[in-house]
Amino acid sequence: MPFPPSLAKSLAAAMLPADQFQRLEELYFQDAGHGYDAFGMHPAFIALGQAISDPLYRRYFRVISQGHEHLPASGPAVVAGNHSGNIPLDGMMIWADVLRKTQPPRVVRAIADHFVPSLPWVGTLFARSGMVGGSRGNARTLLEAGEMLLIFPEGTPGIVKPFAKRYQLQKFRIGHAELAIRHGAPIVPVGVIGAEEQLPQLLVSRRLGKPLGVPEVPIPAVPFPLPVRYRIYYGPPIPVHEDYTPDQADDPAILKEAAQRVQQAVDALLKQGLADRGGRIFA
Amino acid sequence: MKTTLKNVLVTGASTPVGERVIRRLLNDSRVHRILAVTTHNAPLAIPENERLTSIPVDLRRSRRVHSLLFGPARAMEINVVVHTAMEPSATKEGSSVHAYNVEALRSIMSLSERHPSVRRLVIRSAAEVYQIQNNLPVLIEEDHILNMSRRAPQWVRDRVEADLTACARMGLSPLQIVVMRMAETLAPGTGSQMFDYLQSPVCFRPAGYDPMLNFLTLEDTAAALQRAIHNEEQGVFNIPGADTLPLSACIRKWGRIGVPSPDGVITPLYRIRNRLTGHDFRYGMNRRRFHYSCVLDGSRAARVLGYIPAHPILWPTD
Image 1 (spheres, helix red, strand yellow):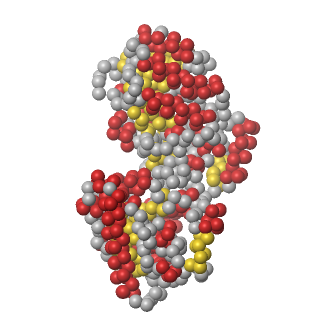
Image 2: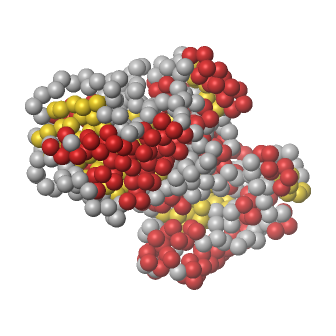
């Protein structure tokens, strides 16, 4: 980052209400020696991230959420949800919501696609706020350290899907199920309503993606995300760590079955959310 | 752990790492005698005594290595060899450097296998043997992909070759072979690229990137090697240091000014610096770790060797 953590902390202290700033001192964090964890996360930048995301979270997207009691207060967990909206604001809103709604506050460690750490500035900013690159080793290390991961099992096909396919889950990959079973973590399903309509897409360009170092670039129909209301629903944890033994993490049929359970749970949350919302996309 | 007294041969004894190891061993009651192998142009800075014998040997010549091991080393009943000798400079290349970096180890290993008293070989390898890229884990375990690129400079290729040469004999050799893949020791004379980089008042770094780095101190380097001497296990061990921090913080803590710049500018700038001032730092060699985080996972060393980094760097601005 272009500025030191002390400046990030001062900015966050100035921008956040005192009680919100103080509660972040209880943040679960493994200091690797200089205030950063081994992946580059720093509490001052978490606080700054909360301060910066606050206008988006409270005023622009007016996030409402329910079911956060299903998020474990400690220990490893995998939060798995639908991915949409052409830019990963859904991940940012889940990150902000988990930070606000957990007590003591927890940072959900978003697992991003391989190309994200390669992006200048963005990769660094995300790393400071807890995101890690999507390698098996990174995810394993974090789960073994008792961290909570955020995984979008649809991957890139989910976030860049056309507007016509909104709320239709793309095929769930099985990596999240394998990680959870192998490392004894429950999977908390999450359904995000609103992100699917935030940035309707005209087309997707692979050619533009190459020079930018990303697989695909969606071309949106509007110049900036629409002020849709975000509704985040957390479902009861799926105890894959109890239903299967770690040895079964090598069984493709078991992994497929576990991933399907997660997909069905996310789908049910989406249906519930859409029914609650009705036609009120912006309200 | 056995408590029998050890007789230890240390190569690279006149380097800062070798010297620190010897100082620790001199204070170690479990070590009886020490044979320090230096180079002809760099004598040992520690005065000899009844426990410490120093001898200059050109390790590039296998005959000399033979004479060392079956001469003074046999007479002193050496049972552990600690091999720390490696050409530190990245600008020195060629067959002579390769002979020092790789062939010397090959000779020491094959001769030690038929030596009457040597039972254990501890090799100082480097974290630079690992491949760094965006889709690989940040926390590097011992089974991480190695940097096998043909385009890597000889400094890296030699270290990978030496490391693999030792690993290939593990389990096949009568010796207990220990390969210590150590984080960069941030000190002069250790081959530290980062130390050389930080000698300039202005440090150019890639704009938009601020990766996590890990550094060792000389004290922890020597402590880890000392633990490997006394342990009975063989294998590969990552040895991280106590300092894990971003590149920008490292520059700041060293009291330097970091200037984010495009890659296309940094490479020629450091090439010019090398030519004009004779500095050793090569940006091309460090390009990936200046973009992507890489921190050694030392949990195996902690579990098996009982090594935990305990000596943080004394940063100039602290």
